[in-house]
Image (cartoon, rainbow, N blue to C red; front, top):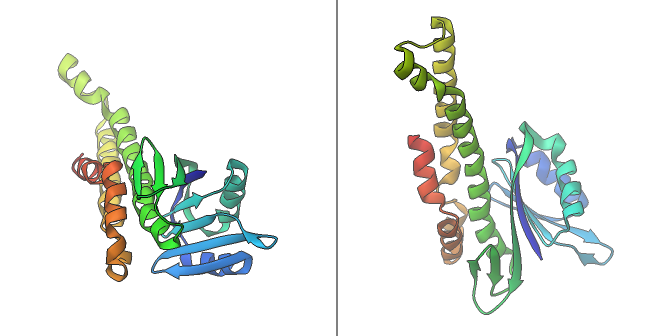
Length: 217
């Protein structure tokens, strides 16, 4: 079965999104995460976790169903991205909960276990948006030191240099301002027994190492 995460915007309007989810499905609010289970006839199909920082984790949906989920999000996105950031996994059930080679093994069907893992996946995909922003900044400025080394001067006016410095400052400020979403979620204050599942997921996805690089880049 599929487990995917899309980061589509800087953030979601969680109160309005929760009301929307309640009108369409069985739903709950876990701090700043909306959990929804759409119904198909007499049965639930899959589970969704909407995170306030613009990410949604989908468990047990087809790709076409996921596209439908993303269309439904349009009215709740703040600062939507031109293209969603995506990460994909498969999942199954087994004796222990772990991740190996992008396959998630779950020891039970608990919503809370899925949410603990979803926290790690969503943070990783949000972090990917920061990494892309850093890469874009590097690409736009990499020729400056090369030109300086070759010619002893930069082929830009003072105004253009000031503009580029301003762009870099704004992007670094944006990353620093939003980096708190990568802290251990407050959800685990209420469910400390689930934190090991989150930590294993975050470790598998190198969230901590990538976070340090993004902040210090």
